[in-house]
Amino acid sequence: MPKQGQFAKSVRQKKLNDFKVKRHDQGAVIDETQLTDFLTVRFALTIKKKLPSVQRESAQRLLQEIAPRLRNRDGRLADLMAELIVELNAKTPWQFFWQISDFWPVLQKFLQKEVPAVPLSQRILIRQLLSQTELERMLGQALTQKTAAAMLLGQGQAEAAKINQLSGLLMADLYQETHLNWQKVRQLLAPFAFSIDEELDETTRQWLRDLTAL
Image 1: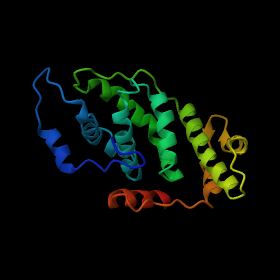
Image 2: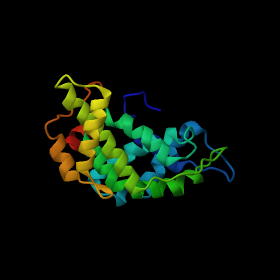
Image 3: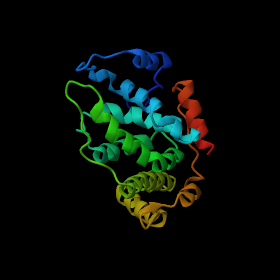
Image 4: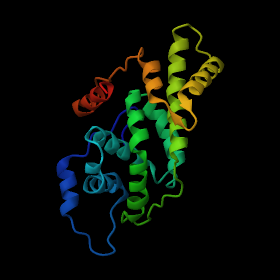
């Protein structure tokens, strides 16, 4: 699992190739430390090329954040994502959430099919799904909380109650019926530049730069 505040580096191609050529006897299992790599290989072999090219890196990185959390969250995707979105909100630009809202149905379907099939000694079942409506509500709440905090901090009024109140007002404007209005999200967050952590590896920094350019 990556350190808190850090993205996992993309799995090295050699490691992926090792998985591709390895043959497991019927009934053989893999160690749980290999779960993320195993799912990354399955992702590359199945749905990665079906996604728009601009989303492939983001979908793979989200998968690599989800995979090591599956056991502790007992395959409950809604609970897992509620926690993960808060973490990601602090270290990614809003465009990552925009992409997640678009590719989530495909990635969730992949997780439903592939996670229970991973040959672990104790297999992981997907016990809870996350609807598109609930996902976008989570994404919107995270974005408006961060934006409200930034706006009020600049005014010296960063009390929790005021942040929550302003966040609610912003959310009411951005979340229309059952979906976020991403054009309004763009307009709201345009004044707030995203700062890239220079301690991240170059591949991750380039990915973040590409996101901010969308």
